[in-house]
Image 1 (cartoon, chains in turn brown, orange):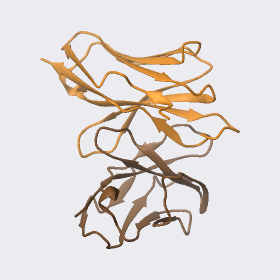
Image 2 (spheres, one colour):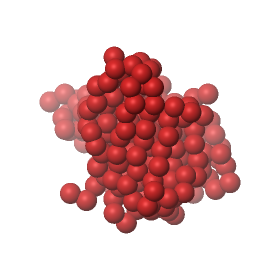
Image 3 (cartoon, each protein chain N blue to C red):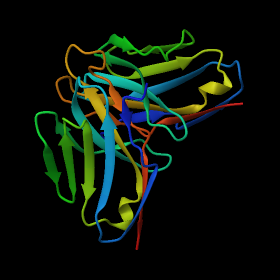
Image 4 (cartoon, rainbow over the protein chains, first blue to last red):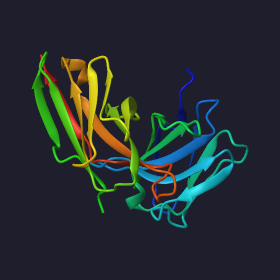
Length: 113
Length: 116
């Protein structure tokens, strides 16, 4: 399978705990995106990388959220001091710079109790 | 500020008939539009796209129409099949130099149900 993969697929945590998600993009893709989707809404942009550089961050990304792509391959999204409002599906997508289509992974569903 | 809107939360169609899903946008800087299909507990799957310099793009049973003056696009599925039942999202990408460049802005989605 050469698609976008995400790990874990599901995460249940208690309020106040830290969580980290991983995304592995399609191997030749140099752009990587994070989105968040809540029930009844479309995905909302959080941040994106070109290679290892983080080029844009949404104002949705509070200081409790941090994303990295240290070697320009996989990426991690960390949420510190989780809140119940962080419960959502976290989606990762990748693309080639200059090509418009983004390909999505299966998502990580987070539930904060 | 909802820049991309899908005003129909759901659509029900008989198998074999045409499904038409609609999407409106407000940002004239959007230069590329995409449709994604999503099943529960899965990520969105790319279906079809269209550049703002075109008004139609076709791929098998799927056709996307773009009306730039009305800031409106639609997805036609002909003939509709029960396996097409899913949530459909339209998405838009901003042009170079705009604030939306690179990222996709999504509508809220339309649930399509195709009855046998």
